[in-house]
Length: 296
Image (cartoon, rainbow, N blue to C red; front, side):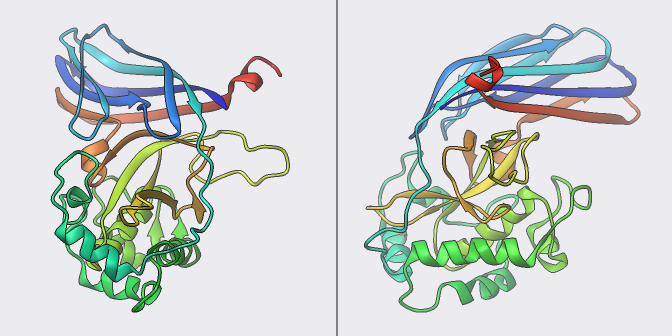
């Protein structure tokens, strides 16, 4: 499946912005089951753009804008081929204690190594109450894939999807206590629960297919950037994606932008502006199979 992606972010400011410096993570990565065929980022007013790849593999654009402006428009377009399928339950599902031990004794420090997703991080500090709640999904001897799947389904069942009631700075503990939030909150809660039990878990920022196949339910989080979790399920199974917002294993409808320890590592747009007064933000995302974009 080849997708065409268009992502437009517009900031409107109450007062003129003299200058801005931004970091953009808006280009889908080359990843297992995913190949970027095209990627382009355009900024209005014009910006000096510098590209690099971060430690975890995200493609970054550093934008420097020195033209005074009242509106900043960032448009990202991409073509991505997805070949991954949602995984089936493994024939051999290692006990979570064995996976925990393997993660704790591993020696690799490569970007994909589980050690980077094992400890508390900026947006996911230690939360014993979340770990205690998550432990019901991972009793002694239970397979790590089965346990992570159960935790994903419990978050979907017990938490209300409530846009506008949290923001990017909402702590995982607050969303956990309220049992409300959006995909970012659900991902942070699941990560806190798994890490609290000694299991590596990392945050994924990406997209969902805008329109589902005929007869299939529309996934929550389409038409915006989405977030889900990858849990390390041992050296044989590796990283597996879990989407607690939709109680779904990550498959052909998910497109990865960036992977990190939490949202702070993968924010699609980050930076500083020199101005006073407030701002408003609008975001538009379309993720459409190429044959549909061509009219069939």
